[in-house]
Image 1 (cartoon, rainbow, N blue to C red):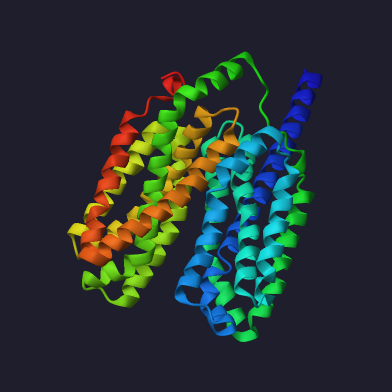
Image 2 (cartoon, rainbow, N blue to C red):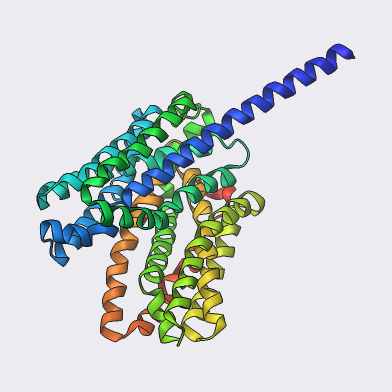
Length: 404
């Protein structure tokens, strides 16, 4: 009995050590995600400083922002497909070094066309990091894919709000050339990722008979995958619309600009918090039910925003952050189930292609708001939101997802 207990104790220690190693790798990949998104948001907030240095017009500034977004989003499914076939885990560390280097030297560029090239080439690393990083987070998750994936996405999600706060005051004081020093945190994080040995994580699943069957059936799942892309694109549209026009919407509701700004910050924080909640819900009740729950909450929140003007409007904004973040994880998990042998491409479609499509839809709804008023444009958002709920209800359950 003593020997058996000793063996059990030794096995428990080995298991605990493995779990500690998995956690360290997950943290390393997630911190890398944070800095990847930080570099993606490094240049757009300080384009007004490039104006005085290079004489950029508004259209030139908009084009630079578009190049960064499109290079980092539309390319994701294609790069993800290549990664599924030939990708290696060490590419994750290389992609962080790549984006850190290219974005950091943007401050010493004095030619507009060269600047466009620099940021466009640099942003390609983001198209690699998102699908490969999320696939690694899932691989490290064991039986809690939703929670692991939500940790990866939540930590990265904070970068968008941190980048302007850090970058603007530094560049205003020391000039654009100070951007060169921003390469340092990227290199340090890359060393941490290497030390955590993420390059040793085996990404490709074993090819089983079931896996072969799913691979053949994936072609029949294009319809469901398109539904998931639409759901994700609608989420990007609503999130971007409220970030861009949220303060103005609350001011139309007679709220003070300071209160509106504080509520918008709460909305952004709630969006990251909602990603964690969504990951837990995905593991607890399943992906489809989680999507129904959070997309249904989106309807209620949008009604509160456009149909009320008091505290209900403010509550609608904050809860909307949770609703939009909550559906994120389930969306990706279902895409992985549809493309089990191409999970990097699946992630690229949900996180990348949907981001680009959502941005294009944002242009349309911005134009509608310009023509018919901001509140009317906000009300029109109910159309894609309701279609999102309908699409979610039509999705089959997990067991029938591929074969339906």
